Structures are given as C-alpha cells and as structure tokens.
Image 1 (cartoon, rainbow, N blue to C red):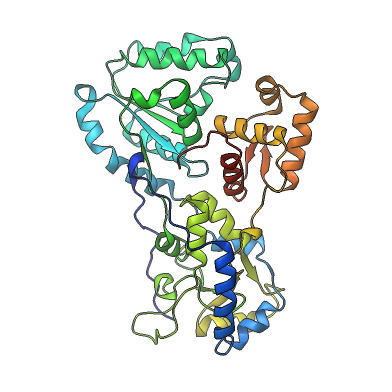
Image 2: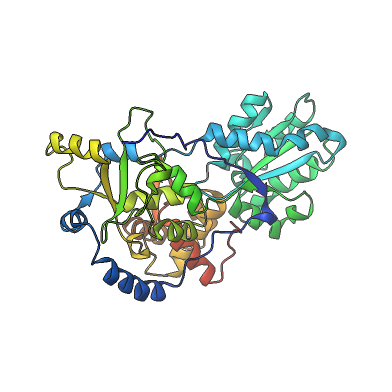
Length: 411
C-alpha cells in the first residue's frame, strides 16, 4: 500500500460573485445513457470479476462507516480562504468602501465560515433579530451602530426580514442607516435572500460585488472525497463504480497507489463530473449526494481477515452507484402550495409552520400537508420546528422552481 498524501488541505477560495461559474454539464441524460451502454459493452470484456460479484448484492454504507468516508466541510480552512480574500478590504477600512457582502448558497456553511473568521479577528458579531422583533419593527438592535471601535459583522441576513410589506421595514431601515455608517462592516447573506433583496430593495446597487465560495469542480471533489476523513490512522479505501469496477476517486489522488506503481488502469468514470455539475459545485449538496451513492458488501464485519487482506493489497473497496439523477430525491409533483412553501423556505433560510402560515395565503392544514408530502419525498427536513430543504433534494427543488418561473438564486 502506498504512502498516503494528505490532500484534505485543498484550496478553498472566495471569488467575486460575477466570476462564479457553475461546473459544466457532462452531456444530456439521454446521451449519457446511450453512450454509457456502449461503454459498458466495451468494458464488460475487461472488467474485473470482483466488480460483478460485488455488484450483485450490495447495500447502502452503514452510518459507522459513512462517518469515516465523508469528509466534513472544513470551516477553519474556509475561514482562512475568506481572510485572504478580505485582506484588501480590511486594509481599506472606512477610507475605502466600508460595507461588503459575503454571499453563500445553502449548505455551503458560509455563515459558520464568516463567524469563525470574525471571532478570529475579534470583530463584533451582530446576530439577526427574532421574528417577533421584525414584526414589531423593533429598532433597538440599531443601537450597536452608535458607538463602535471595531468592524461589525452581520450574520444570516436572510433572517433579518419577512417576505411581505411590513416584514421589510426593519431591514430597509437598517440598510438606510448603514449608508451613513462611518465604520467598516461585513454582511453575510444567503444567496436566495441576496437575490430577493436585490429585487425588493436594490441592495446590489448599493454595495460592491459580493464575494462567494468558489464552486468545486470534479477535480476538487476528487481531492476532497479522496482525502483522509478520520485522521492518519484511517485505512485506505478504494472507490469503484459498481457496474464496471472502474475507479471513481483517482487512487493517485487518494494515496492508495503512488505514481511509481503500475498506473495503466487508473482512468476514472465521469461520476464526479456529473456530481459537480448537478450540485453546481456546492460542497454540502455534493457531499449529501455522494453519501447516497456509496455501497458496501452486505456485512461490514463478516470476515475481518478478508478485510485485512484486501487492505494489504489495495484497500477496502467502496462501491459507487453509476451516476443517475434518479438516485437523488426528486420533485415529481408540482402542486402550487408545495412550490410556494419551498420558495418561502429558501428565501428565509428555513421557516416554522407558524411563520409559513403568517407569510402564505393558504390555510395552515394545507401547509402541513405539503410539508408532510415533501418530507416523504426527501425534499425537506425538520429540526427543532424549523423546516428546510434537504441538501440532496436541493438541486431538484431549485430546478423545479426555476422551471415554474420563481425567482431563484444565482449560485
């Protein structure tokens, strides 16, 4: 087994939003299926017999093993990338442009990244108001602007408003106050809220181009998913596609084999290219869909001796399903109430039933039915009474809302 190279510290960079470009699609699904059948026909003459045996009886990877296989989004490394991007802004201070937005797509952990960066710098964090304070137009939160000697950081700007006329009063007054604020400040905002507020309040006309996390292309996903997930003592794993045995994660990248070994058959499938395009380079979305596609032999602990022998030869094989959007949660039904619920949830970064009932014209029981159906489809989840779109279901939800003419984000 080759010495492992730690590729986990890949570059996580922030770029101007107008430089953002989603990873390109590989080809249409119809063409992919046709070409895929031809490729499988050719590869079937040389595919490894283990792949056929393993593919005959696989199960989803268990939670214990999944924790070892899935790398976390490294907030500390993202914060370092953010600090590098904000260096010039910090130097400019009040003498330059004093306000800037850091915009992030759902599941990209931009809020956590900005908080980590702000705490490292000793800057003042301003948490969003409660729903009740927004409804009551409570301006007491503005007192922080009166006397400050350090930059301010406003977090989760999607929680500073409600999408209705009175629900915009507080955030409108805050933005107006900030235009005459002499200190430096950064505003962290969800990409859906940024798009909405750019239409409703023209905030994109008041501030420089926001910075966003650079999307992950398939090479970056290859390095990230192939990196050690639980420290140096984690055994090597080899990711192969279950229908033909071909590599999905390049073993040269993951450190399973070295450049000095026989590298004749290390070509990888297009799985990660499809995943990068479908997730739009969003790390949280790509990670969730990657997890859904990982498979293992029926009994993870069936024969430890055989597992150890496999490790000694190359590494434990983790099987990956061939790419198909059908493996992800899919929005098959498009009832109006479901679309309205999903759009409201995304514009506000998650909502409770009570707030949804406050914002939407539909009766509360219809909202609850829609949420139940969306949860059964794997498109929404609930935590502490707040409903959010799931990472794996997000691409289908976004595509559906866009197709139905709803305002969607740019990331």
